[in-house]
Image 1: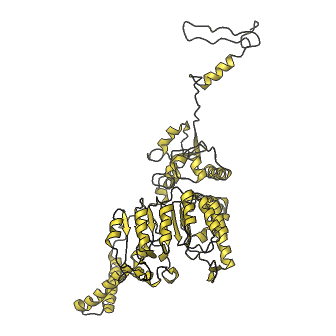
Image 2: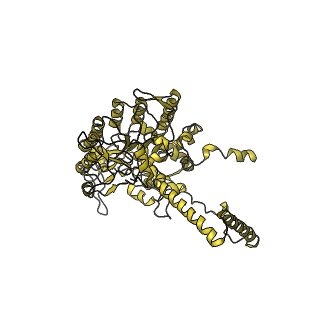
Image 3: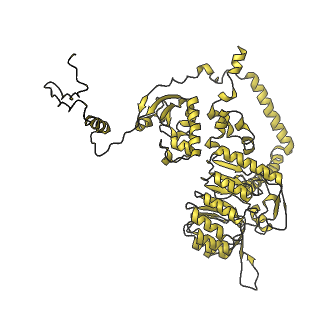
Length: 539
């Protein structure tokens, strides 16, 4: 008895959707440490596109030392091998479904690593790459040519931006968001205006910004909607021999030009703002390694922020300190006790209350959780036979009285047991009530791919579709098939079937011509019999 119970609880029998939920809580190191090699079921769960919409490598840093010559950093070989291994495993499991790629500002990627990554996540839409020291012109340009769907980029300030911005302009037609983590001068501003005139969101926070460059951006980027210059060190460069000076307040001209923007985010409070003080101390080139871990991820523009924890950190800390100072002054005045004594008394009173209330409180006032026996079992799957794609849509989960169905390669499966995934509000809800073969093969959530047409797919996509089909066959019950539609040609108004019969009847028989049809008075016209079908004389 004990042996049969143990044998029935195998790891590979764990529900795939539950595995995906569990794996979503893992970081990149845990996902790539070998769980995909436990069994085929776990590998299938590790390849789920929900796990790989974002590849976050922001916890991975290079072990490096600074050197005086280009690329100005020397990365330890072991550190490079770790990054290469993580990239290879992650990109293999993701199967091209990565949409967002995030690197740490101290993670120095090489040309080979970047090219390898670009070739294996061609659908990338957002890239966060703050460190380019080891990336050459040919490497970054080759990557940009592969990322034609790129929409958002976080990058460092570079000495020669035109070549790079031109690549984005020529290859990334949907590009709309840019964050530059470094100084912005006249060359950078003029390049943005010339190469990216349709830019909608630009963040230059925590950097040195030339006042004339700011005016050029406001004048030249006519489609710009959001501009973030929070905590920037704004400088004005007058004609020589005068030296540059720091602008502490935006003038009327800049404010008037920025009034057309939907959002113009600024902060120049050097006396009260911690980030403004740090920008000034670092002379407009932030040394993020000196500050709190993760602060480099923050941005006042929500679509560019990787973490919003630190945006209100200084404000929250200041408010907490003010509240504590007020309490320390008020407690002795109103109670005659020191703050330490007061909070000790409060803690003892609360402890006594909970202990005493436990003796006198009823023990059965809470609602007992339902046992496994009380949970209503799912109804058995019902065979629906052959239905059209239009009829399949009524089984998309909106009607709780009907089963939840979806199809793959024309075969319909009952996925009611996974309603939390395929039902309304679930991550795969858009697949319900449809043949989603093409979307599953391409790991796509776009409406245009929600079809059973798999023509034109490559071998990589067909393999992915095959894995999905194996999953459905092993987990769900097949309840029907999708009716195949037969195209009707203009030459045969009555249908393809009649055309086929006609072509067969036109063929002459061996024994002679066909006999004319015999018309019956009591019914429809009877078809003529061919000589080979006519009864013999003996009969």
